[in-house]
Length: 403
Figure 1 (cartoon, rainbow, N blue to C red):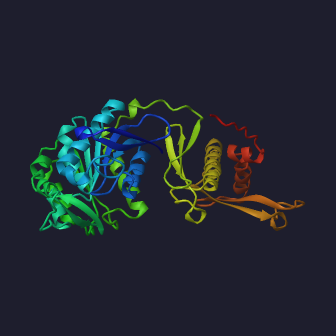
Figure 2: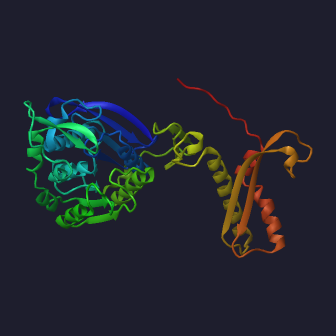
């Protein structure tokens, strides 16, 4: 995944901060607009992880900071929920001007409520997904009590999630003005409601209210085990992936994608964590990272895991091709591999060598078993798989640095 940061004009001429996430290569299947939770930012862990999950499913994602939050200009206490809606529309306008209008709208918590309110002003949007969102913005008043007194400037300090914020009287008045039940009933877009059953900030009853207010096509996904802020990394990624999988049916523009260059593999730092990498192989996309013990986030297999996976896949494919060509009744093939650096003196296969060596152990199993002669022949064929032969040939790697 590659990310690009920039500013764009928001409502009232205020500059909003945005980040564009997408695959390293190729055109996204469609563009998504992602709104963060109340008082959060586009760079919150939840927003970043949901975006990564969507990118895995082929979407390009614009996430942005609402007025006065994150890196956006303006005064948050003066923006109100109406300002949030205008910011969503401004972000969609920017995406339309620079790439293509968003086909998918995704919002977390109050950001999802804003997406429901703004959808009718984004005609190209074909699907809307909410994550832990209330039906009405006034739900916020249950968690942030309206102050009894306001300062001379019309603001008062309140606690939101244990953090102090100054909110205006107009902000509280605005929350109560929006009736979204009728708006959701006339959404005329596919709707997905994602909610954690044990969400202690926005209860699961709010998901029911959104779902009941909406008309088909509507769907619900339980984020079982997650908390409201999607604190666990896997919960944010899971939400993004499931939304992307669901939305593909409604927004898929894969036929518009640029043709992938055969044989080219591109690896690019994602910018999320110290070592996370996005890998594009033709039209296929996967991820690599280091484990937590090595300073990474364990967001994907490490490079040696990928190497073993290549050898294992090539081995199984080669054996299957051979079995089919020879008409052998061979059951399902599985390959288990391990890599280690060992002393040559401890390696039974390395007679006469000194020092440390790289050793890959490969164990092939065949469902149902085979006779001894077939096993011996398959063992020979395994060593003829192209990846095995490449590794054994001590290949020449030619490297150059561009730029």
